[in-house]
Length: 364
Image 1: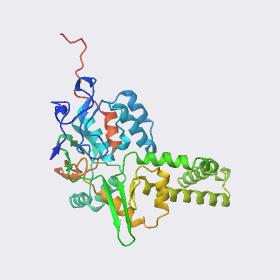
Image 2: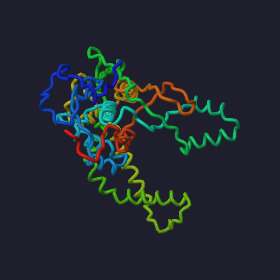
Image 3: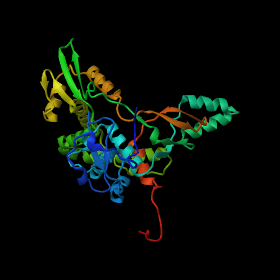
Image 4: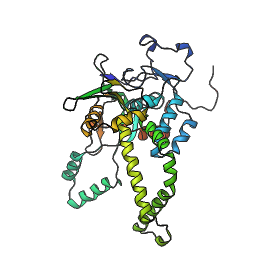
């Protein structure tokens, strides 16, 4: 079992493990080596160096909504990495998560506190059996479902395991052959930057059309918001809110449907590397979209098989973690997936226990 080592104590001699372009004497103070469990077999390099967050790095995070989180995280982490040729956008999402967990463990704490406990139906059944009355149980259940009560736990990062990858057998691409229709296609693994690549491509492809429909889109959104607030009991003068004529609304909806269909084709083409006997990884995305859009053989069956394969890949941190069950008051193994937003929030709220604070300069 590969363990997360405590990089702040007894750093391993990474120079004996891999060939590195940076001499150890060239590593600035404050940077530590990171070696992920994927061993350079996926999107992250086998070795890179990272520093801790500074106040400036976290300012942008506080102002970021969920929609812009991938872009903010990519820019922020790349500013922490010493090597210029390392791009977070090339990482698998699980490599990004493992990187942040290692960073947190190195610079902050080996305990991740106050995370939401992933309760299950078995915990609900335990509460039902333990609670004296049905009414009391219903009150507890509603508190749990409506998040008035959120059970929380501490995760010991020293106890985390990672999946071991075999360089001799692990493959970052998958090839599918449908003998019935005579087609072979190949796809690479999904990268953390895919959503950014797609968003940038779609923005460029529909820039002019989006401008044409921007006023209709804003009006529809404003009216929908007003109607929602009215249903919530607010005193809204709905008659004063602009109405989009039906024919314009239908024209806009037809445009959005067309755009959405194109986006689906773009998702299919994003990681296409092999098509009908040819390596197409270097083709522009638009050309790969043309391939998948004009070939009915690349259907739902193909797409689902690819998604299922990459979703089931055993990489990064193992999801099965020993933790204390705050509902049953026992320690047991639970399936828990680290989320980027939770890890970044923990970093923002962390208080270091390794700083010695004094009021006189130390004696030499």
